[in-house]
Length: 452
Image (cartoon, rainbow, N blue to C red; front, top):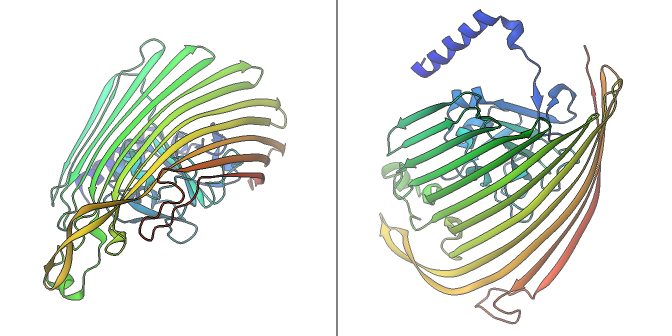
């Protein structure tokens, strides 16, 4: 048993000895289903909850190390913190999942990235909730196979700081740090930093990460709370780590990277401010405005050698999420939630054909660099969406909890081809400027029954 595990075990044993088991077995709660705290036992979806103590214990360096502990959830490693996800189904890179930070989607609809969890600072999170399967009416079409909601850390009432420094083989090093301002009148602030580096055990598979998270809680008055969150991540990664090797090289020189020209650079910025107002008589009103900026510069090894190209994307988002909750009947604990989600996300994509530069290793071709060629795609896409929803909960008996929801999604996308619809770039097909609209009405029903 390692020293860290021993310390955690002793601390847990002392906690149980001092407080007793009855005080430690508190009812589990979730905030993901209805965007506010609800008993997990009364949530008619399958939710896995990971709290801060589990994150401290695991010290995850990859989403797999944390989320894989939830039954029905598997995360596969690709490169660095890159991953594919399987929640109640096979691994996929398709847009089956919704990744959230404090209930706000990390990316705009139509700009799904199966690696999106690396844009979040998981080791510094306050907790993670995973919905297995289709979610409630409060979430849109991206939550087909499930959703992952990463929760920020709540600032502590007293000032303090924490620091973790790690070092290991193959150039591995990580610094995790956090600081709390403590409660200062109506304000409390928390800051977290993640600086990670590894050289990788294979040639040209280095990985660098810098993440900064800030959370500011402001109590405007006794009925109004404002929560502002800033998250910024930069990733610089050499991505040829999963390139295959012929048997001879695998047995005799497995550190060789035949696709060392591959790389991925990611910048993700998220800023949100949520205002919650208690109106009295069981009513609450909340507004969450947000801004996102997602950028990626990619030379994907999976495009080697026949379709090698540099892909550059940028997506900015401006959004507003509104929610009104009314408690209607104390005896039946009836609760009505109504809301409207708005999103405006202009994006750009640029692709340049490349010529790969090669040499040989043990008779095998190695792609070690590249030269830029002709621009093959250059287009802009503007995404707009509006989604009103209703959610009702009531308990006909103490043991029975009934929920019903209805959501209407309207989305439009317009594309402008900056190369011109009649342009011919080798064999790459150029689409004409176009616009498309989508709409769907989605009902949801749920029932929970407490057996005892």
